[in-house]
Image 1 (cartoon, helix red, strand yellow):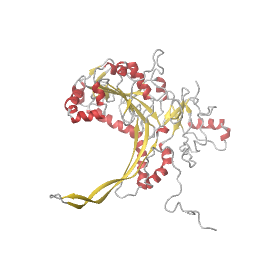
Image 2: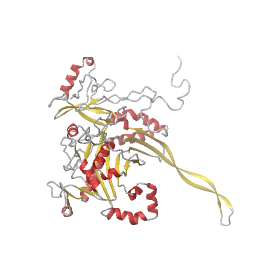
Image 3: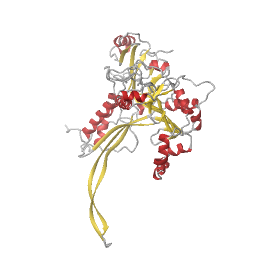
Image 4: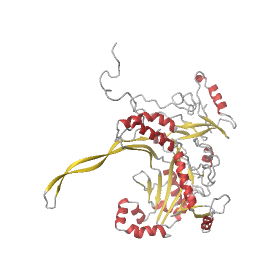
Length: 516
């Protein structure tokens, strides 16, 4: 097995001066030579514990394989090419009959589709309203035409553009980590309502007497208890989901103050070991070291779905992006918009938009296919068939609707990678000293690697951090807002070269100073 090391002789893990500055906490922004056609370089290529390379997803690599466990399909099994469709957000869904009847085919399909990265965009929008008047021609009661002045309000779009963030996702040949929802996390487990897979009498369970009474209706499964989630548990789960997204944390991280079992589990033992302490965050009190295997594997969930006789069943596989503090980044971008947008009574918005962030497998019957078509849904609502017949059937019948939202994959923007040539209890300073000693060409200008100490040794940070991305783009964003830019040519991929501007900039001799 090749080692992951900053000393690797082939240079794949070794940063260069194009990647790193002499400051441990700061990396150089991508250099733009002005032609806006050169793609920026974002950090070094590194190798994982298994010798796999980690690189930005925009590199021309073949699609990574799934990271499910076991990592390779059995010899006698070949991947099934299922019929799929896409909705307006790029999410893949399928009504394929084979996926609804064969658990192995569904399992492999979810791994294959779940390994395809989602698309991430930073969207910026600004507008204001104007009250205007116009002269219109009308008719009086006798049918005689006359003119009148009419007042109306019109919304004016001042700027609208997007920036492509997908290019900064880290791609690994083993595929993204596949996680299974925690047994104490409220989730759709084949029912119309969210459930948990544990009894309310477990030690440390924070439930009220009312919740305990509700837990008496728990349904026994082959491996544990399954019961309807209480209102307290569902409210806590919603808050956890919001905090995870705001802080940019993956599903397997146990949040501060939360009960163990609410975090997701990792099935593959190799991936589970590699993810120990890999999350890049300044938030204290999180636990990403005590990762556990799931009670039920993804294959077992797939088998449960295929055995279900519900007509409107659906298995939803979620893709998440982690590694950036989305909340703080949105606040910083809002400040840039406010500083550069001076329109009176104008409104601005910045949001991160995701496409292809889930994969769905739905029932293969005619009713399920009709409900996947927006035009059929509209017609069924107009005819009152949906609210009077379909919705009660889906809501109350044991053969109606049921969802499985129990698994997903995670894609990193930044992460810590363990350096396998480091030693337990070795400090980053010691590792850095050895690095500098083995690189004599850096003696005059030694590099500072972003390192941290872990129980296993030393880890190195890879990926573009949100602060570095912000530093690269803030001037471009401010300029585009002032210029009232409307991005009709698609998302921007590289920052624009910011030269002088303003009134008179294009006049010959402007800015050259007086002649001597």
